[in-house]
Amino acid sequence: MSKIHQAEVAIVGAGIVGLAHAYAFAKRGHSVVVFERNPCAMGASIRNFGMIWPIGQIPGRWHRTAMQSRALWLEVLTSAGLWHEEIGSLHVAYQDDEWQVLSEFAAIAPGLGFSGTLLSPDEARQRSPYLRADGLRGAFWSATEVCVDPRAAIAELPTFLREKLGVRFHFNAAVTAVEDGVLLAGGLRWETGRTVVCAGDDFQTLFPEVFVNSGIERCKLQMMRSAPLSDGARIGPMLAGGLTLCHYPSFRECPGLPALKERIARELPDHVRHGIHVMAAQNGLGEITIGDSHEYGQAVDIVDKAEIDDLVLSYLRSFLDVPGLKISQRWHGVYAKHPHDQIFRSKPRPTVEVVVVTTGVGMTLSFGLGEETAAGTAAAATAAATAAATAAATAAATAAATAGTAAGTAAAATLSAMGGMA
Image (cartoon, rainbow, N blue to C red; front, side, top):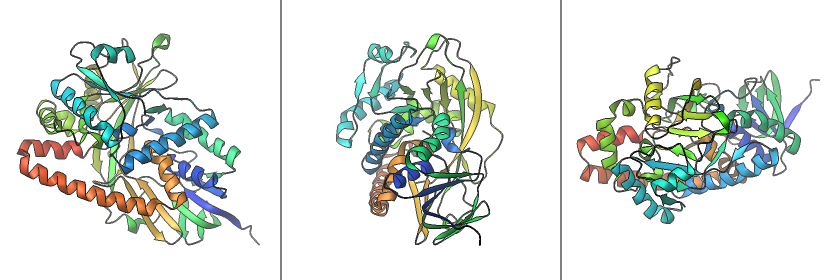
């Protein structure tokens, strides 16, 4: 008789969302097994900035989830002995309309649940000495953002989970079928009490029917990494330029945002066309990760565009002046993208749940989402968030139709479609 393989909880996918779910279930005392089709995680989880980024999240439920996730990240990183830095973030302004939006955000941030403060040019450069002085209006400082090295974290977390919590891992073991209470992985049959599928942008292998009419597509991002800066130089907090104000939903309530979007659409049409906004984060080795762009569709172009990298770097140089900055690596990442929803959840079977982050914020939300799933609070939270998002979208559409110009509406539609890859 062949051996019966069993686990209380099976996780499909060893990216950050899968690992976070494994942690949430295992710390509750469940026996957990994780299956990964590749020799190691190779998707979006290792191809991002390494930003834990509460400052960019939708106020309310998603910001709270991000802050919960941040706390759990710090718990895990500290226990595992993995490099991380509670370095915070700076959104910098070099144009009057950018400073206007930051000033408006600073005024409403406390009421939305965010913390932070405006900095003068001198104060901003004290925190980030490589910011360009010419034209700097100021910056918004937030202390809540955490930088990790995604490649190191995703590679080393399985060892931590195995040794500290007894999580079993099977790499090179593609899960080819899942039903209630059983799955097939790597040619072996497993009996499971519950299965959570965290397969990222793989919409075809398991339960393809749940994705057919979901509205989910793929988003490709081009990114770069510099060689380590000489003499141990540090850029300070993670940095975001004016384009990023058009990108993250936390700034949507700022009255000056439509005018900013209109100017950017007029002055930087190529950046808008490629969905570019520019951020920078420095890891423990001194390398700076730089990005990114956003191209949408079911099929992803395997060829990266030199034009996009040039546009990203030219914009980076408008606010960051690092002498001798040398690009040593270039790559692209791909993640699932939904036009409205942050998270896609589906229960194709009573004991099976599909969980996909659909806005490129998997690093930021991952551990919070794992807690929701393991605690059984995801359904109620998702329903409430969907209702709130629908109401907000309706109000925004009404306001745009009433007050927006054609150019402003077009710019807003293009810029708002951009998704992050923190």
